[in-house]
Amino acid sequence: MEDWRKNKFAFGIFIGPATFWLVLFFMLPLAVVWVYSFGGRGPQGQTIITFSLANYQRALEWIHLGIIWKSAWIAGIATLLCLLMGFPLAKGIAFAPAKWKNPLLLIVILPFWTNLLIRTYSWIAVLRTRGHLNFALEWLHDKTDMAMTFLGLPELMGTFHPLALLYNQSAVIIGLVYVHLPFMVLPLYASMEKLDRSYLEASLDLGAGHWRTLFNVTVPLVKPGILSGVLLTYILSIGSFLTPDLLGGTESMMIGNLIAQQFGSSRDWAFGSALSFLLMYATFIILWIKTVNAKDGEATGI
Image (cartoon, rainbow, N blue to C red; front, side, top):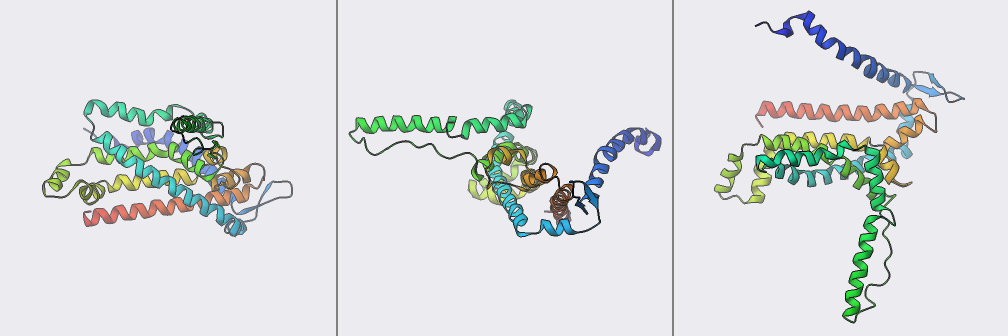
């Protein structure tokens, strides 16, 4: 039977439309933004192409480096929390009985069926001063106060003051973890699903405890899934715009918000383009490091 990939005409028919779509609607707009990054802002907000590195130099000013650093560590904390929660969740799904795996995976991807804006606004209803979480804490406070009064200790609880859970960096981290947790769970599940469980059984039979088996056997075997989940979650988190915009306060601006500001109210498309490509360059470097690490692992048999 003839291999269709050796038939250039058939190959062109199949690959042509997708290539045309990617070039026209992805590569060309990206090239325009890249050219804009070497331009400047005109007196009326227009972009003037000057082929200068001034925008990149401006992006490295301390005020912008502070926002970039803040974005990096917020994304890092969110990624770490996703890993700590996603690892046992993915392991539980992978080791669950066959009849439960698909329903559990459906629960993980179910949030994707709802618009991100709606899901983010739902967190506002949960975290605001008179939100569901503070109402629950107030109810718990009142019930505890009633119990203390019954025991003759009425002064211990005091007056309940709602917690400031919204419009701060903690709220941004909560939102990022909620949004990106499935992107951590799915790669981990894919690696754990293919895991040869005989290695785990052998480790336990040879006297290693569950924790030692976890760190010395399971983690190294699912390392590709961990790396993929961490990279995917971190890249999506550091470039997030909507979550910090709705849940964060004035001290929670991330690089995505700064880029949106340049393309919006500031009307400085050149500087916004430079910031966008700085983020893209960093992404390419991270992906390149992952690729090199994967090749080295294959070469050494790890």
